[in-house]
Structure formats: C-alpha cells, structure tokens
Length: 273
Image 1 (cartoon, rainbow, N blue to C red):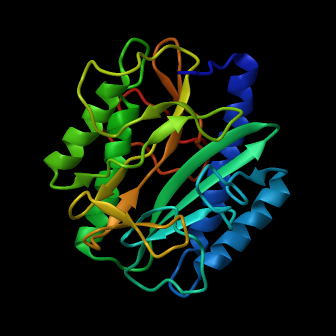
Image 2 (image 1 turned 60 degrees about the horizontal axis):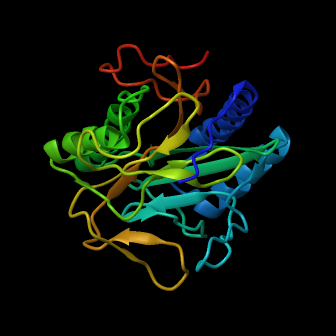
C-alpha cells in the first residue's frame, strides 16, 4: 500500500483545492431548482472553475476499463447511486440529486459532494438525505491518530443500518492528494479495530452511499459509468475530504456555504464565515 503523507505545503495545497471545490457547490446551490437540467449544472460549474483558475478532475478521466468521463462533475438523481452523467432531462419537483465536484488547483485535488432537494420532496427522501449527511459525520468524527479505518466504517454502518437504511459496499472513499485516487480505500462498513491505522498527514475522502431500500447496485445501460440501485430505491451520498491531524481531524472541503455539522459533532469544524 502506497499511502502519501502531506507536509505543511501539501496541507496548504489541499486546503485551497478543497475550498474551491466546495465553493463550486456554493455557487450551484441556489440554482438547483425544478426545471434546470444537470447538463446546465455542469456548464455552470465549468464557468466557476474557470473563474477560480481550477480545472475539473473528472472530465476526460479514464481509469482502467472505463471510457473517458464526459463531464465536469457527476450528477446522480434519485435512484442513481454515483457517477451519474449530466444530461438534458430537466429536474422536477421532488427529485433528489447528488452533485459531486473534484477540482485540481496547483496539482492538488479537492473532492466533495452534497445532496440537493429539488423543490418539495417526500418525507422519506428528506430523511434519507439527512441521515446520509449524519452518517458521513459519524465517520468523520471518528478520525484521529491511532484509530483504524474499520472504526470509521463501523460507525457509518451501525448508524445507517440502525436507522433502517442500507450501505452500498461496491464503492468507497479513497486517499487523495496529487492524485485523484490514492491508497487507502475507505470502506463505509466494517469491524472496529481492523484496517489501516490512521497517522497524521493522511488525507482521504469519507463519502457514504446510503440506500432507502436494499444495498445491491448495478450498472445502468452501457455508458460505462452510471450506477443505480438494483431495486430502484432512492440513494443519497455526501462527501468531504479529511486530513488526520496530531489531535484529530480537519475537514478540507469547507466553505462559507457548507451545511453546518450535526449537533452531535461537539468538537468538529465550524462552518467557515
């Protein structure tokens, strides 16, 4: 396993990239309303990145066995779990959509995603989105030197399943730095005391995908990217990039418009002013 540990310069670079990624989502937030298309969301995001002097990490991204990804961000609507490709279909009242942004700035990557409620949504949809947000923070709030990745996964899994939801197993968080995807893999399920031990300087994403129904997923059609729930139930995801510090953690993808952490995060980061 080849984990990279960030020094002060690396932390500063990632902090900037993370903030810029979050600020793309800040800009998009008031615009995600009934009638907008996900392709328009993608176009608007590209404009913001250009203004920032950042570039999209996803457009043209082609890991082994995949076709080149064709957009500046991912938009996963309703039963789409992840990697949804922006298209010309207007969002409608009651939809939920995950917008996942990764930017590169000065060689460093910032990766974050948020859920958006489009107009008035069902109670079940709102609860799923809120509980997924809380599940992400349950995992983040575990981060400190000496714990293991299995402790993070266990915290997320027990919270999600305890509230009647299921956790997707096929996709996970990941190390990040001067590469989009680095070691280690960060599972959103697991057993306490197992997996890689955390040490200061590690940076990785925590990005649970939580389903309203069963946890099984499948690929949609043949675009090579879009993943949906097998039972077509709603799915939600939130994502932050996290640094392990000497005493705990720093969330590197904070911005002025970030939703505040849940009340149970007593010593966590405050929303940036």
